[in-house]
Image 1 (tube, rainbow, N blue to C red):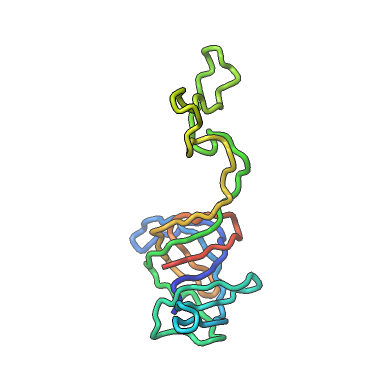
Image 2 (image 1 turned 45 degrees about the horizontal axis):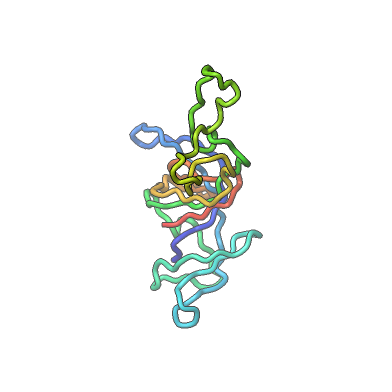
Length: 185
């Protein structure tokens, strides 16, 4: 079978397990995908399965089990790829926040209001000493915040809602509502 799946992020919610403990979950909308192409080591140099998901396009996943490869035009559901309590990682593009200052972007604190500088409370302060004579690479400064690919690891599959095509994953998943996410084992 394949090692991952493609889904759409839906809402966050809470689920209570059988012991009464509340678990924060993210609902992922995952329709069945159709196998369009099988890649093999002899012809392509690697083993993979290419699947089509709706009108969005094609994506390739590594072949997890070479003995149980799917056939072309076979539909794969999330229940065939994952099981409850599987450890997964989710990759998606984070929400974009535009150009942000250091307080929003890096969590800096405000400077004191008193002391003669009334208009510099949200400024980053000193950005370096005189000795290097330049701004050190990687210095936390204002700039573009968000809108980049991010992977969250060590999430768990909590449950499946097969009639509604939903996968419930523990914890939060990057991205905005209806954004596309890639789930990997």
